[in-house]
Image 1 (cartoon, rainbow, N blue to C red):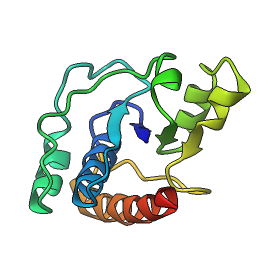
Image 2: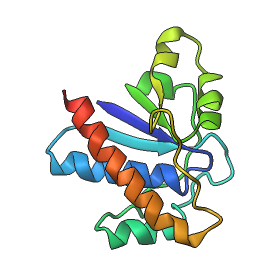
Image 3: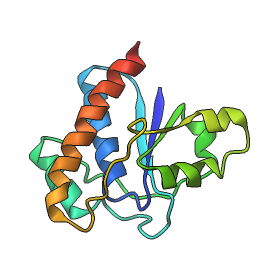
Length: 145
């Protein structure tokens, strides 16, 4: 299983989802590939936001090795599942799909909901981490069956 987490700049939410899912997959001994990307190009090559790094570290997860990259149409072929954090990013990723099969790979990370952007409020990083962690645990169970 190869899963790509996608959000706008690839520095806050998607790196958390990437790191959390990678952590859970390793705990379960699964040989899955997890990655993350952004729809925008502003932060290419940058580490995750310092606050994402801090909240992940406080929960025993190291995301410092991640580097932001931009989503590419080649990701449709490289990944089995592409999970986006909100509807705008869903539309941005779907716009790059060339086939119905590619479109089918793209899903909202939380069905019928979105992960709020903590970028402008330091206090939101811990609740976002908890939300993403809970969803990753559920997602792992869903995908294993």
